[in-house]
Image (tube, rainbow, N blue to C red):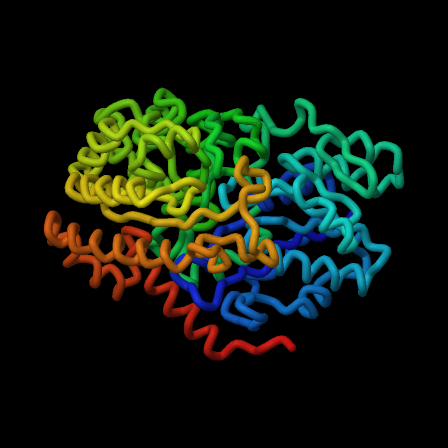
Length: 499
């Protein structure tokens, strides 16, 4: 059995290279590749973005980075028995659909499977949009985690056992959907093979010198030390894709993976892409002790964020710093207690301020993420967010990220929005919103004031940022984003245009 796994092109909104065009390495696809290979399936990866990340073509309001659809088709051997396309992020939906339609037009008998990304807040619940995929020619949509079920599906297709297909949990096909039941997620994570990064063009990712997390060395790799999240936030897709369940890997298994990549790829910088890696304070301490006891020279960064209340105290922060942690992202979301309650997002400001202060003292860079434009948000609510940003900046937070709320298929608030034309418009700068101009002005003013407050409270940090930018040794995302925006702007200038 020979299958192709495809990671779609990266899509950038042309009028906003600052908050779109974020590079996420396809870690769940790499896990699926490893499981397929372990299951005896011959696997080839086509990374439509990273195989040529500096090739751009323009389409309407977007830039599509990477291979053309014609180049993707040329890379699919005639011997291929099935194509698995990874729905990595909502904003890349346009590219995913292009690739699906072109494959189906060229190879109508080749089964196409779309895989869900369950481990990112930037992804989407495919059960909500499955019909769009099926209408475009997709044969199967596989929801839930694909590690084992993709192997089952590949083996079933190879055997030509049509009836067994309908027993694979989470599978959606024309006129039929298999309940996910208890098989949505993997529980024995330590038993899974490490991601098959040897099948991906790693040098091309590294050569960009920008990533999701702040890239401070020439080589890095993402890690998933756990999966899922137990919290019910109304704006987030994760409750739908993980059933509010958190599952950890053991400390020894996580550090085994670090040691493996150090030896196999010469990597010592790791970006933690978990939804909530610190849910168990005991486990995060165990990971730190494992790194220290093995004397591993590593740097690791909690790039995708974590629930700050789950980090128990300053002692844990000190231990994390000793073990090589250099960056932690947290998500207050809003300064308004009323909105937090509406969002169903618990947040302990006092605890966060205390730990941000300790991160600053321990040499760990920190980020605080906020959302603007949540349904029902008022000027008073936004003023509370303004005041919280000021307070956290005074205590030492290194950067803030301000995202304008957009509806994500699978989130509780998805049906409360209208006005967008396609799913790729559902990004952090939803220009289709009637109130976008107002929210964008507030965001810009708050960013400007943040930089002024940081200069006032922590002038030395501001002074070192230009050097980090010039050396491309990024300690924060805010240092890296202008560099990324510059590259994307230049790529846009020389992009080819689709008719």
